[in-house]
Image (cartoon, rainbow, N blue to C red; front, top):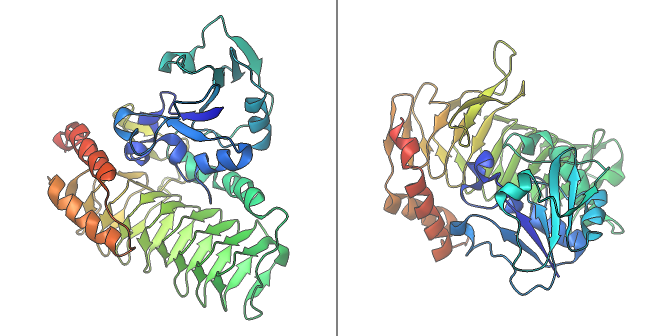
Length: 400
């Protein structure tokens, strides 16, 4: 038996975050979606994704029965139970949206089947709540739900490590959970609006002000005096300072200095230079528009607050100013005075004064140096993914 998380025809809608991962490998809270599904089902989890990602994110080929799930779904308990109840030949739907199939190996659904399932399948209607990540901004919109779901999985029936008396806790102290090895001293922790979770070997330094719901991933740091408003999820291996509001950081990113990050999503291995600031609200207080790779144009986000969406291995220089709804691709380097374009294509350097193309060899060299500082290496599978992304984004660079 296996569970496959399918891109289900939504891969382009979640670019640039999915240039380097399937939908199911996104990290909207403490856990990736795949990790959360595995913890809730204890069934091997694989991916049905783009061909160039399949070496890093493989499918499962030897299962006798497959439950294939839309990879953009948060595994809430009612949904998980409904998926596990499916039998071969059944499809789970809600309000016309296909959620999951149950099939035998070799009979995988097509992208079209996710839009309109074959008539011969037995439709099962799901009546519970859903959280769907189908645009990049959905990750910060639904960060609260992801954190609550993940923390229930991670902390239920367990006791927190001791919280130092040097901290000030506002609200319910039982909503602060520290894994063994976490370090929190002389911080203000406010659980009035949600829990605060600090993973193993992570640190909240002195003078930090944190409002839940909030999670700090394994080995990450909140630098001295940081101000964080929940819901915010910081993945593993990050260095975060300044002011952060309702944002999701997948992992291994640096925002170590002052500056504002709000209503934003960063991939992995990103770096925001000192005093990088993003706008998250237009002066007109109107709907924010952002670049869509699926439609290849600016689209409405239906959000009044929307900041920065940044793909893996991208960076900003010091004092960089970013407009509302700025979308930055993979391996981009943004710097200089003035506001850069609201869409910065992958593998470009520059800013308001113009963009130039970044060669693959140079980008890989920088990525190697960045990852080496976290004792990680740029493996062949990742090199191949980045090379594919560079080739696939020629059209984006040609338009600048």
